[in-house]
Amino acid sequence: MKKAAFHNLGCKVNAYETEAMQEMLEKAGYEIVPFKEGADVYVINTCTVTNIADRKSRQMLHRARKLNPEAVVVAAGCYVQAQEGKEIDPCIDIVIGNNHKKDLVHILEEYKKERLVEVEDIGRTREYESLQLTKTGEHTRAYIKVQDGCNQFCTYCIIPYARGRVRSRELNDVAAEVRALAENGYREVVLTGIHLSSYGIDFDGERHLLELIRAVHEIDGIMRIRLGSLEPGIVTEEFAKTLASMPKFCPHFHLSLQSGCDATLKRMNRRYTSGEYYEKCVLLRKYFDNPALTTDVIVGFPGETEEEFEQSLAFVDKVDFYETHIFKYSKRAGTKAAAMPDQVDEQVKTARSAAMLELNERKQKAYEASFIGKEVEVLIEEEAVIGGRNVQTGHTKEYIKIALEKKENLKNCVVNLQIENDSQIIH
Image 1 (cartoon, rainbow, N blue to C red):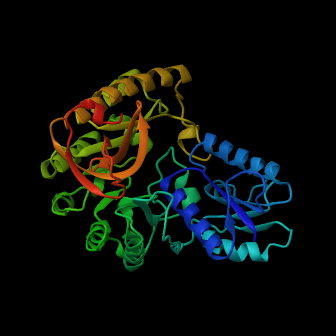
Image 2: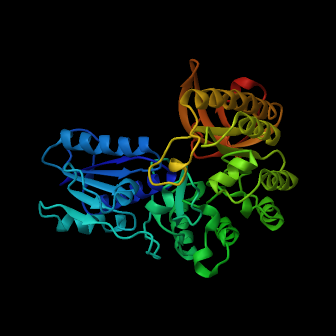
């Protein structure tokens, strides 16, 4: 029996694809082993979102070659897709671009000790790559890829070039996978994609994410539905009102922001103003009681003055996010922003990041503290030892992590409990 080892880099979509490829090889008779010495095949699902991601991808490919010089080293995904037409690193035996991961078993069968390259012009393809899962690395929550590609072309982002245009998965195919996962005991699903808000626009020019959520909500066995990152434009009165009427839907919204300054948003090509973004947050809070709003913010984007940063910081403060993921702007070769004038000094980026991080810490603690004294619903996921205590941990619908001291094993069960003090919250 041949042995295969996998390593994933990057986002939740990449993680889904890695697990799907792993399941394909298992069904084909491979033994899946840790990413150590002794594998016959090493598959690295690469990332290219930043220059650092490129470097990590190269490092893992070289590490695989060192682990077993005789093994077949497979480079899959975004890094090699973005390298299309460029010289291929000699440590790689097989190159699989996006939209060819489904062919992994066949490609390995065809490999005859001569380099194989399966990369197409991803910007021209309109076919959604069919991958499926019946199990995942987690035992209670399953991430499900429903969409690929992006049509936005933000000036700092390479992803449209690595992932292509928007391609959506058929609703019935998603529902079938969710049913199979429910039958295998999964209680929570997270619908994810490269640009989730665009789900279905390639069908007929209209967004169909709400329709997809409705279909998943009807599936027996699934108790919770979460969404991956959303663009603010998808939040309408109908969208918020409909989701609020669904008992299984988790009031946890990751609304991508990137900057709270309109001038910076325009240079980023983000297609909304801070005022429009704020209206969407107000709308969500109109229909949901204290929902968790989380976001991403880039500091030090080219041309960001001190005044613009202060506007962004003040806006993040005003919105009152539960969690803000802060990124120092990093040049990505091949994007418009990399060639923009007025690149911000690294020390300035670091200082701005620290200010955002301090604000995030305060907001996070305040949001979590607002649940003390309230009853919450928790999906128990695993056992752990925290501060010398044997506990079981899980997440509320808002994705607050909770510790529960119970002797009976409640894994994969949903329990209602009152948060009595801060010690029950895992920060």
